[in-house]
Length: 334
Image (cartoon, rainbow, N blue to C red; front, side, top):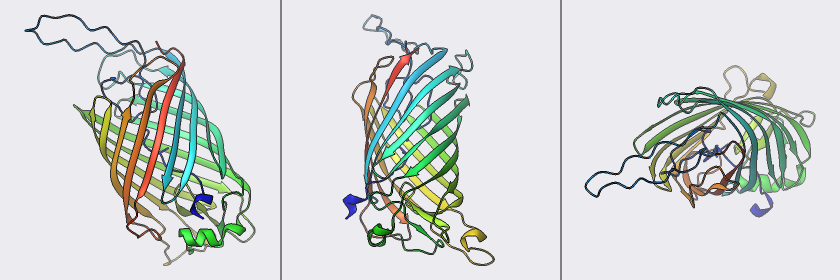
């Protein structure tokens, strides 16, 4: 029955993977970095130096003033099971013409995004700004349509529900098609010292979904929790990674905190905790580090995580994810 519930998955370095981090206008190609935006420019040919002298560090590639590119991230996960493709068409403008470490990778962009899986479809605009290398923020709106397939969407009168795999299987016949609105603000703090990179991505999300009469909450397969049909949810993905050539190796901590109020029957001293946390290793390998082409940085991603806390996933089986990402420069890549 689990294979019948192919659904959404995480973000991102998401995330949106989930393994995809905020875009950088320019990144060195000596490391497979967790980024969904390619480095711009053409690789510089190496200079010939005497054997007794160290090779000079090649200059960074020039950053284009304006770029148009496509990003694609495709993933499969287990516990919960899910399958999804996430794609963005992005127009990006460089903010500052600076060689400073803090201000070289600064930009603003706008994107059209689409996320599709066998159970739902999300489309909408996205805006992103990186005024300094250490800080990035995205704002998105997604019109969301649940198709009523694969056992989704399932909704409930309150958040005090069992949303284990067995319970979702039993309620599959109650799934129905509906639509609504999903708003996200995603601030990210990030830094890199030598081969070590750290990132903390937060998400503040608001849902406004049409549910059946008398029902105020629903199970979201992407966040694997019961959310308010009209309400908030907070998430965090934090990474520490080591970058070595085409490899990225590290660890990720992920957490989800749904919020409820009187509209969902939670008020006064009553509390409902459907939050969960997990942690585990993450790795990626870039098959090449090409930039400025129609097929940049094809990268295989993988993650395994064990639940530190979850209302219905206390068994030893871990969360597992495999993804493949690439990007394509359509204008301004070189």
